[in-house]
Image 1 (cartoon, rainbow, N blue to C red):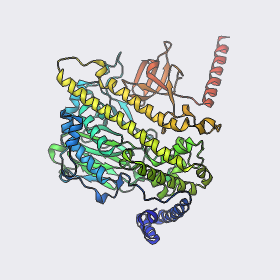
Image 2 (image 1 turned 30 degrees about the horizontal axis):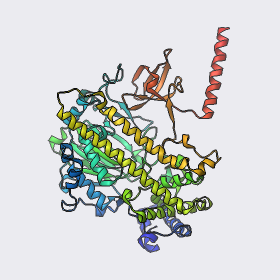
Image 3 (image 1 turned 90 degrees about the vertical axis):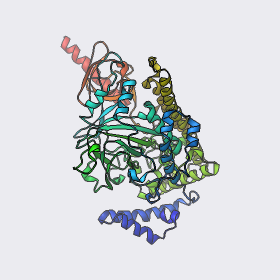
Image 4 (image 1 turned 120 degrees about the vertical axis):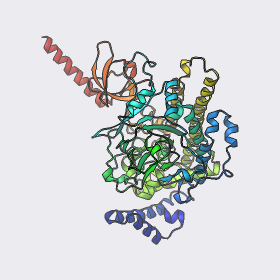
Length: 604
């Protein structure tokens, strides 16, 4: 790929590979990988044209800088979205994100101190701001829990047992109490808190990709605030209060653990051992106003321990608050790997080589040579949504070329050759429409939050209508986003080729509700859980993992959450159950029959 796209000599490519992997077996593997990739690129050219690749929104970190005021104007930002205080205050964020969008973002972690930035983000959102947001609305948050045999999970913050959602309302004191036990995380805070909605909107406008803002609160002097893990988003960490110590590591080679998703390491039941990650690429302390950029799949871990004198005393005495603004291309199917899998599925192609959408980022794809893997598992180009016809065809050509390279490596050229060239263009055009639809929903969701803040200021003496509480205001938008993702997948599953296909190994429209979720969940009323079953429980709009302790005679259930807390008499309407496969249904029916037989014997 270096030879073809950057016009380097073969000698330069091999020298660069040896420099990147200077030791032992890994050096040999890398050299072999480069040779194989060169051969793949040459063979792939027989399948599709050679194109100069579009620049994705990652690039060399040496080009990173923050644009000057002359290059990025905030006038258009303010004129388009109004003069609400949230919009005006978020103008520096729009300028900052736009500089990354114009220059493209780095392909490695980058740490920017406050002194290097034109804008000062310190103090933008503090514990005081959070207290006001929590008291004025009904918000949900989780507390990070790291088990000895599992990765990072979330326990709910606030009261669990209550008759209605208002009694479960989280208070500021709940947050302050929870951070003593672990980091408190407000996922999708940008959809719920207007001040953060403006930051999220600024990122959407700058990157023209779906974006999301999370909020993290950690007490000082915590030895571990987040265990080693990876994320699916390219994130900008913006420290606004206190400090946090970060270690960021190079991504482990996917081929070493092919059955694990490189973008979700250290989460759920997966453990990402820090001892296996080597020396960190970055070992830094973020202070108020500092920014850290971490690309997707880069493991990182955090704490709030520092030695005396490492940070000013007034900073050391504060609890940590930081915003994480993530660019969500992997979650919403805006990657080359997803488009490749979608095209195969649309054509009724089983994709035996890489496993299709069901195994996206797991299994065979993780065994591809580095160069092919890197090209496939990357985001679509910057400003993808605005590309004209020529740009769309160029992206389609690039997608086709690297799909061909993967076919050569996996010896599945016949499957690839069965896909007409025009199908790649159709998929890219559909992805462009999908991205446009996503952006519309995200913009609407964020602007509605800002408009609601303005409405509340004008009617401060009036009670807040129930439907205006963020948990109800945001839910329809989240449902629309899920529906858009379902529609994107149904573009393939509902195609004429799929309708005629009788291959039982291919998923149908009902088999895929999300591209990256192999597990299906159904209402407990449809499929009542049994003792010991894993379920998800609705705690005021957020779903949390739990295990059924016992079904009750009134149709409710006693459950235990994964952090050890228990709740009794949980209504079936609040529970989702893992949908059983046909084999599981058979085993369940056999077990029920055996239990009935035992009961009859006891009665006799």
